[in-house]
Length: 92
Image 1 (cartoon, helix red, strand yellow):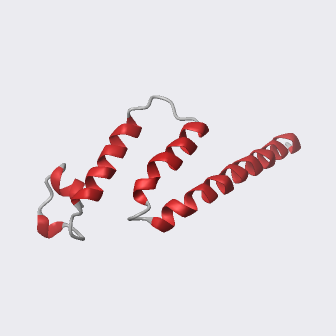
Image 2 (cartoon, rainbow, N blue to C red):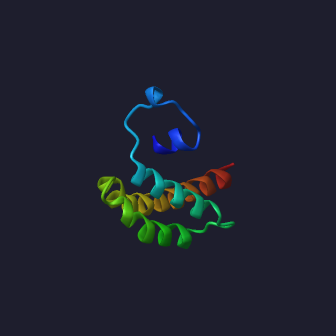
């Protein structure tokens, strides 16, 4: 909400929750830093997740803790779907 108020100029009464300046600044800094990179590969994603998400542990502990497990599951799912797509192509 701090970003919505400060960057976008949203009025205070329209915000859903009270703005948190420290969290807003950290989130904006991280968004701008990660958005500057031109190329994202899986090693960049893992490195970024491990090093930068430590500051979010205070605010979003469950999200930070589950993120590595989700990424592993998602990589497995993409691999499995790739195999299924190959099987469909062969069958046609």
